[in-house]
Each structure stands twice: as C-alpha cells, then as structure tokens.
Image 1 (cartoon, rainbow, N blue to C red):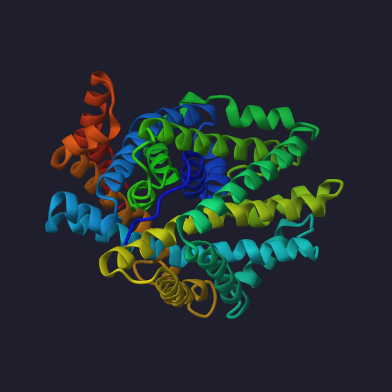
Image 2: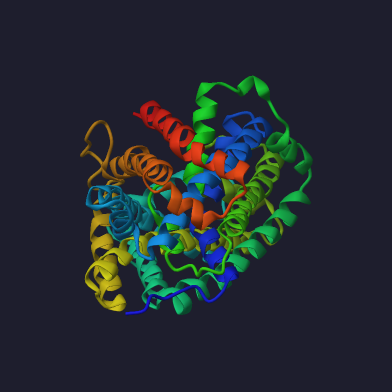
Length: 437
C-alpha cells in the first residue's frame, strides 16, 4: 500500500506548528516566564529552542522521512530490533499524554460553553475558583466534555493526512493566530498595558539560576513536542522535495512566536487589573475571566479566548493521536478509520480515572499524586526525556550518515548538529530527567 504524503510544504509546516502549539504555549509559557525573570527567561528560552530544540526536531523529522514509517517501525528499520524500544517509549508517552490531555481539552469545551452562557463573567476569583472546582470534580460533565474532545480529534485523524490533518491545520492555525491577534489588540489598548508588556519583556537577570535554566530547557523541549515521536510521525509523510532545515525553522519560529504572542495577550490584561501573572495553571480558568468581566463586550472576548484554547488543544491532540495510530497501521496494515476509532475509545477509557481524580477518586494517591498528576508526571518527567535521549543518541551515534544525508547541511552546521545529538542534547535532557525526579 502506497504511503500518504503531505500535499504541500505549507501543509506540513502548519500541521507541525499545530502539533507544537498546544495549551502549553498559551497558559504554561506566560506564567513560567513570569516566575523566572521575564525577558531574561525569554532570551534563554529562545536561545535553547533555536539550538538544542531545533536539533532534536530535525533529528526526529529526518528519522521519520528516512524510514517512511512511524516511531516503532522507524527505529527498528534503521537501527535494528533493539532500538524499537525507543519507539515504544514514544507511543506509550503519546498514549499517556493524550489520555489526560483529552480531559484538559474537554475543560476548554466546558469553559467555552460557560463563556457562551455567561457563567464565567465574574469579578470574584474565589467564586470562579469554586466554579472551576465544581466543574472538574463532577463525575459526569468533565467526562462528557472529555468524550467530545476525543471525538473531535478522532474526526480529524480518521480522514488521514491530506483530507484530515493537513486540511485541519490549514483552517485551525490561521484561526488560532486571528483569535490571538484580536485578543492582543484589545489587551494592548487597556490602561496600564505598557507595564504588563515590560513585566513580560524586561529582563531580570537576578532570577537566572540553575532552576531557571532547567525550566527553560524543559519548556523548550516540551514546547517543540520532541521526544515522543510526533515530529517523527509527521516527517514520515514528507516528500523528498522538502528541505528539512527550512521547514523546521518555520515550525520552530511559529511555535516561538505563538508563545511570545500569548505573553503579549495575557500580561497587559492581568497587569491592568492588578492580577497575579504567576498564578499558574489557574490563570486560565480562574483569573482571565476577571479580566473579561471588566471589558466592554467582555463576554465576546471570553468566548474568543476559550475558543482559542480549544483550537490550540485540538491541533496538539491530533498529532498525539496520529503518533499512536500510525503504529498499528504500519505494523499490521490495518484500516485507518477502524484503528483510529478503537484507539480513541481506549484513550477515552484511560482518561476517565484522570478526570475522576479531581472528584470521586481524589483521595486515592500514589507517591503523593492522584491519577491525573501521576500520568502527567510519568509522561512529562520520565517517558518524554527518555524518548528524547534515545532519539538524540540514535541520530547522533547509530545512524548519523542517514541523518546527515537527509539534512544536507553545510560542514560547519553538520558538525554542530552531530555533536548536539551525540553529547549536548542527551546530557542536558538527562539533567532535566534527574532534576525532576
């Protein structure tokens, strides 16, 4: 059976940028930046992203295109049976992440509905906190929104590369940027917005320490979705006519730009109303609605904001599901639609305990973490770094001539890329792994 391919370079870039632009870019990046010295953190984050981050992304895409199959098959085909373990780590990571990510994606649906009916319009953060707690602890509604989000992801992936993922990327990514730009323009016109921009961009180098550097490393790798094999899966559908370095630069640039735009969207608004930029994940659901309640046409902007979050969540979840689905399709030549449906059902069932861990299963904890937190921790702090280390070592030591041929770099860039994969990336990801453990 002939393998599908992206119909255009633009389709690949938009779909890949969608994979990397997720909820992390919208809600995680701004508050991590706020806690780590603003512009100082931003500078270090961008530096890491365009050196180590892009090197790992290029390695993944090169492996995928060279093998023309998903993670498990690619490592086995190019490196032998033993290396397939790295691919299995990626698939397991994708399955784990998508199971709880679909729950959070469901929250964006729940809050979009709450924005539409006006329930989020309040000046009282405590009331908003109670609203959020009541919603996520419910044994029914978050599971329904989790199912709806999984279903939306299924519909996109079921139709394959060109008719599903690529078409969705060409619609969702421009929609994402238009929504962000609309919210940024409104945010920058608020009284005191300039102070918020300065909070975001002005560097505080006194905050530069080992923790900040590890946070920047972790967020750079997390933001680019490297380590699980999503980029590898997308690269496996890439034609020989596309220059990988050029495409990867576009994807990395769009991802970084989205993170910066998220900061420009959120910081001026929360500074204008004296709210805490370092409020953590609660910023999304319990702080931003206060901002919207102060604005003329605030409900409209609340709806736009939660629609933005839903789009960002969906573009990432599509890549996670494709990462998982491509394994049985490649391995056993199974039909895409039936395979996608079966895996989505599995993910939905696996996500139910994660959803219930904020309610009826909340008292059940292992290593001090509930089910949701345990899934998040194991994927983000163990599986993702292991996958990243394995991918870098595989590209740098096992199949470097193959990667070199795929990239076609100048001698100087080729030398830098090789030693990033061989030494720098594995060592720094190992540092993140040990630090987080």
